[in-house]
Figure 1 (cartoon, rainbow, N blue to C red):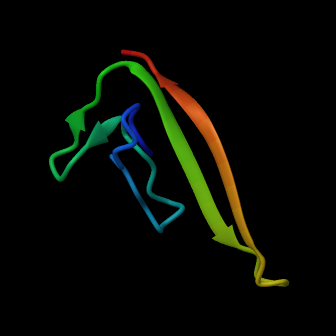
Figure 2: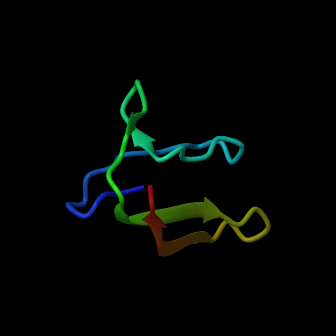
Length: 60
């Protein structure tokens, strides 16, 4: 998850761990706004790398 300035505020390599709307080791609450998500993965059968990008609106 990236903020509007392109700073990485959340990253996980475990699909069971999701973003809670915070950043940093203490999970400080982020401001309301639009955040960009990037999903990178590799298809096991073909070893092809895939990337999907989208936006999420955080409303508090």
